[in-house]
Image (cartoon, rainbow, N blue to C red; front, side):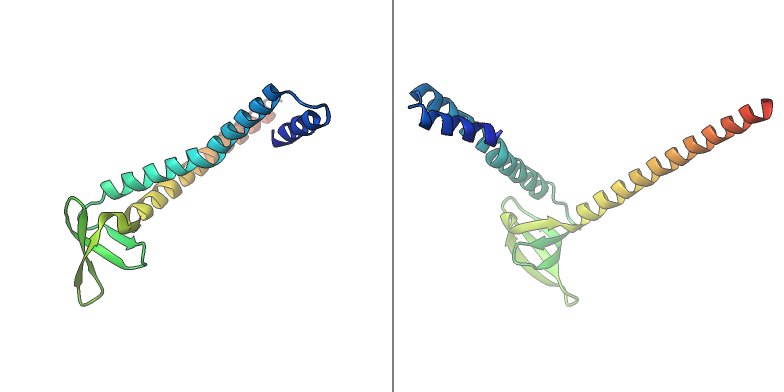
Length: 140
């Protein structure tokens, strides 16, 4: 798509070009930029906000600064986490949470279970197909 835009720009420059083609090219460039850069960034921000708002007591988190801790108390804009073997408590802002390790591990386990189920389903289907082939061969 970018190649076609560049070709339009080159042909517009060689032939004098009309202002309408330049406007169309600029609009196309803005649309491409929106779908390639702005929209994915907004999607990531929305996912991060959902993750931060769905924190629960007992979740293990990693902050933006790399501190690993367990959520002890949840307030409106901040959290109290417990970190280390000596159970030091720290108050952090909710926006400072980078990763919810508990949810990430649960999601990974669910994905692995789904893959395993799909693999088992496929192997069962193959076994059934092989059995049908054997039955057909015996009847001949």
